[in-house]
Amino acid sequence: MKKQKNNYLFFDIETTGLSADISAIVVIGCRTPEGKCIQWFNEDGFSQKEILKNFLDYCTDWNPLVSFNGTTFDLPFLQAKIKEYGLTDSLCKKEHCDLYKELRPYRHLFPLSRFRQKDWETFLGIRRQDTLSGRKVIKAYQSWIASGDTNRKEQVLLHNREDLDGLAAISDLLCYPALESGDFSIQKALISHSSFQAELLLNQPFPKAARFEKDGLSLKINRELAILEEPLQDNMLKHYYPNPKDYYYLPKEDIIIPKSMKSFVDAASRIPASSSNCYSKFKPEHDFFEDSASIKTFLMHNIHYLMKK
Image (cartoon, rainbow, N blue to C red; front, top):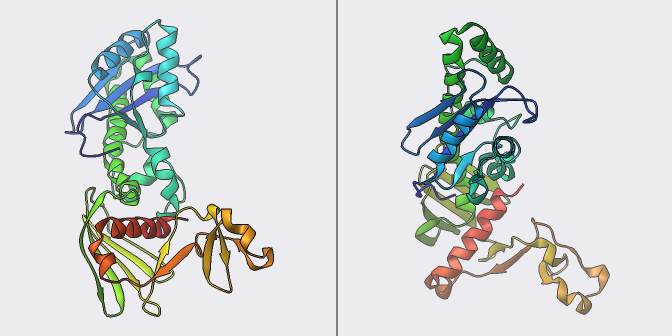
């Protein structure tokens, strides 16, 4: 998801359980990129259809929708309720960015023991006022229905609102897939002190400084500035390829060949390539530095290698 696109809408729901067949929607919340929060609350326990229709009407001009684990829970739950109440399912026509799915391939790059939304919020230094767990949200809502205690209602709404604020903060971490996909411009590329150095300007800044290192390669990132460095080895650079399954590695020669050429090499002399040996070596000369497309490809592939588990 391009964060420059300002038509995306964060959404999150609270329910009385995990199964749409036997559970109800408590609140549907949305947050715009500018921070405006809209919530539809099931005031009496019987207003699911009303708040669902209001949510669908509001979503008309927003696309994509952004959630955390919404593919597994929020969307299926809402669509089951849409079907139950005979409403038109406009959600199926919208793009959906699930932050859980988008960030999962980069989990190994973060010091997280678990992969819950609150774990990401802790990593980003977010402190909640809300103290309710999912189960306690259900109990607070049941207490509201039974007693009309507005404090319990406000607790539920606060929980949902801070979920939405957390979504917005976590979405800044889409800078990771953006970087890997090449969403940057090259400011400098040169040889200095026997190393290749490239200075990159990121279109999606990193909310926290990061550093990746592997086999001599390093990438340092601070906000929108990234610096990649690779030492020369015998005046050569290694260009790591992102598709090792398509190659064989020849250990004696320290080269790779496409699998389509395996018949030209004795089986005992080749092994399947892995991410760490799927590279070619080249001497960076004038033509390389004059070819911006070649430099961009080289950087993207080596960044992919650094970020790969």
